[in-house]
Structure formats: C-alpha cells, structure tokens
Image (cartoon, rainbow, N blue to C red; front, side, top):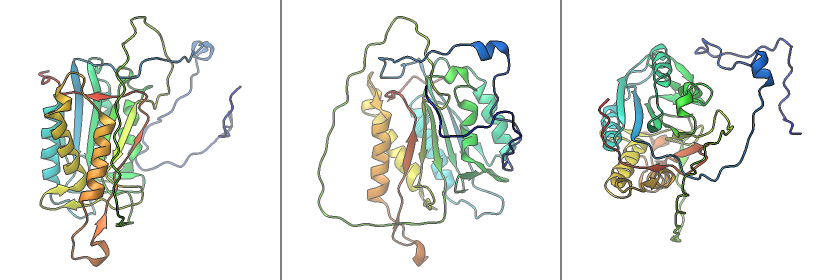
Length: 311
C-alpha cells in the first residue's frame, strides 16, 4: 500500500491561510456514497503523442500596462500585438484583453473553462504584467499564479482532460538579478525525435492526476527580475514570437508538426545567449535573464498550423 509524507488530519478543524483572492473553495472532497464506493483503475498507455484535433484551440492574452501602485509597463503593446499575431498564425481562436481587474480575470477564466474544448488541440493563456514571488498582478491587485490554471485542471474542465494546457507568463518573480557567467567552447549536440506511435482503436478508460498535461513557461527564474525593452517589448515574449513564427513557416506547417518542447528550449537558448540589459541603472546593467518551464505533459505535443477558427 502506498502512503504519503503529508499528514492529513481528517475530522479536525484545520485552518488555512487565505490570500486576498481567495473568494471560493477550490478543493472539495467526495461525500456521496457513490463517490466513496467508486473504484478507480490506473493503467499504462502506449500512446506517446497527444491527439491531433481539427482546431488549434482557444488562446487568451491578458495584457497589463497600468497596474495600481506600480510603474506603467511601457512597451507591452509590442508584446501584445506580436504574440497575438503569432498565435493567429497557428489558427488559434485568440481573445485579447487589456488591464482587467482580478474579478474580471476570474470570471473570464471560469467562463472559458466551461466552453467545449473537445475539438481543440490545446488551451493557451498568455499573461503580461508585473509580478512577485508566486504572484502576478491584475489591474487592481496581486493574486497567486495558480489561479490562472486552476479553472482548467482535469477535475474542473472535463473537455481539456488529456489535452495540453499551456501558460506563458511574462512577469517578474522577485527582485534578484541574473548575472552573466562567461565560458569558452561550444559542443554541438543533436537528437532525433522518435516517430509517433499509431493510435489505438480500442476505447479504454484511464485515471490520471487532475494536474496532468499542463505547462507553465515563465519569462524568468524564480525570485528574479524579468526584463522588458520599452521600445521593442520584453526579451521573453519577443523571443517566443520569433521562434513560433519561424516554426510556423517550416516544421509546424507540415502534417507531423514540431515538438513544442523543442521550441520552448530554443526560446530558453535565445534569451540566455542573445540578451543582456543595457540601462543607466548600474545595479541592473549588463544583467541576464533565464526563462524556464514547468511541465506535467505526459506525451509529446506536436504543434501544428491549423486552419483559421471561424467560430
């Protein structure tokens, strides 16, 4: 029998610290006799690629220029327009919003989570705002970053189960700066992608974690600054768009598509190698930035250019 290192005391009155954005209960436990008696079966799968659906999916863009109590995010329009164009190029149903309050964001995410995503490859959300450790800012207040994906987890959004849920976050994650480290010599490494396994025809029920099939791509490492050029936009979003646009004209335009993680690694490489800060503030000058992603993807996601969604 498996056990857990987390001590959960059932029946006791446990109090949990709540943040300002905590308006509703997120976790619920089964109470009905049917729920308690239901047997869940976990089993292996031979499928190693996500399903190729007719549509790319919905992509939300939350752009914040004016945040209460913070310096205006000059140049964010460049990022907004660039990522919107890149996602449209893949056939996404792109919906762009500017300077929403937390309440408006919360309502929007829950509304989109209730839509039918069954014919979509994935769901994508891009947030551009100020941020801090574990938090991102709406127009009026900060909220925990997990509030972005909670409505789309497997137990909340059934039509996105077994589909990638992608989150791109352009925001600071602290007040540290990434210093440059020099080295000499480059070793060229290549790898081949394994061919996609043939889909199985037999219908089988699987049990997977509610947090499976999610990816969060951050513009910077935890507790570090994220840089934005006031004239051309942020290093992260502009690099992401350049990599996506290049792939859309090449590998992603082919029927087999391109492995998303290869593209995201290319974004990491581009920001890490090609950018460093140039500012009059000596403490922030000649500094670097390291994007990174957290993934619970369980299969290879081949990103493909899809026909424009006319719905």
